[in-house]
Image 1 (tube, one colour):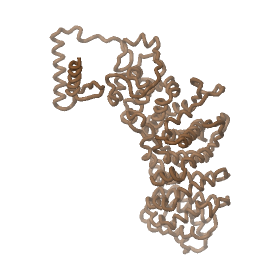
Image 2 (tube, rainbow, N blue to C red; image 1 turned 120 degrees about the vertical axis):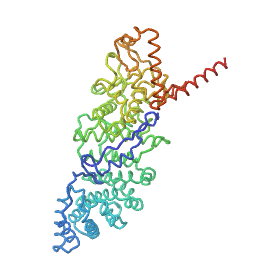
Image 3 (cartoon, one colour; image 1 turned 60 degrees about the vertical axis):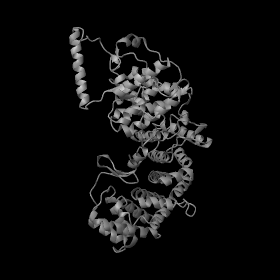
Image 4 (cartoon, rainbow, N blue to C red; image 1 turned 120 degrees about the horizontal axis):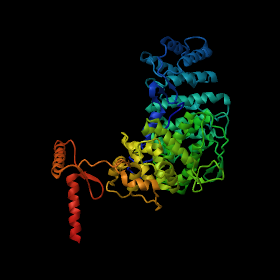
Length: 596
């Protein structure tokens, strides 16, 4: 990823009905922002990555320090040339020689002293590039993270647009580099994060974002403004609250996302679909991704919508996110990153506002229709889910957000549930194979029901359970009792029944093939088995009794050695130690007899 990451999911227990979407993402956001990546890749606060190159040469650093402090001769032009060479040689440096730490600290101070003066634009850019490289090292940021130095960088970033308006295009590279420096410094320094709140940095960034609206040539400024807002809202909870409550952050960031996607409205909550529109450019895609990530942080814990205005804002956002899902980026990788962040943000949208993901279908033949509704966005979510399953790794971060989102959509919106069930759990015809064997989406999801990651298997099971309208008999038909046992035990449904949520009463219809095979289906494995000969048919009664007692003794020994614990099912369907379960049944039977 060029600038950032997919934020990511928060996977909660699938058993916690109505709360599976969007949990646990704060931790993933931190990983997304920077730090060491996979395969030796490291990132800084700007999202830039490098492959662990060696430390910068000592003599070169000494020469740069002398030039910045004015001891090298040649004036500003010579300093600019030396800095340009240093920047080029260390563009991908992320690990520095500890022996030169003091020199780098002095170099940071020297650069900030130069930037405080009125120097020409090209010299400012060279200084800021060097400072950005140096600020990847947390250990040198002590002299940088002062109020004075933060204000120098904020001034260069044109964050006070009232006194210093955004006018001269020649200054735009300076603004971009200053924002990049602030990204690195804030990402790497807790002191800088606290100073950001004191200096009201978030409000200034929102103002700059508004200033960029409808202006040409400002995509990079806008992108790093959004990235800085993402970092601030990720790393400082007070700034996140300030953005949500005081600065109208949801509205400002939604407008930035809308602008990046060039949204055109045809009616309320409906965006014009231009199928011939070319893919987004790399800059447009990056801006949209940064806006999505910042919005994700600002909209955390937005389950309860209390006002009509909030409901409108989230429905408006959901309509833009639907358009985002229908949009492609310059590459397949960028498209997947864009869609992943859109899905993460949809997980924060109150489920009552997600009906705008579907709308009345047009007459165009290319629409994916169901009951007169356009289901293109839902089909994209299903395709995204299957693609993430096929990856075979990072299920918690990559798969659980989309599974959680689809689960809540199906639980609340009947048309979405029926459309998805037709895709995932079509009427059974061939039951000769086990439910987990095969290449269909159903087979892949059933395999996940026994995954080693508890969160993954719970949300996969919950998704299928909701598609079955939380009816145990329907779930067992598609998965077999063995695959579903974990979910049923957690929900207290081992004895059968259905879940807590109400669904429409329309009945599933079995195919003739399933009806004819049903008597011979193994309820545990969920597939058709040929009748097996009964090994006890040729035994005498004494032999049967002997084998039964042998089995009882084996279980008794395992139980006494505490290798196993015999369990039973309580009257309410939950598991309990066998003695307790039997006792409850006797108690219930006695109470029933007394009442009679």
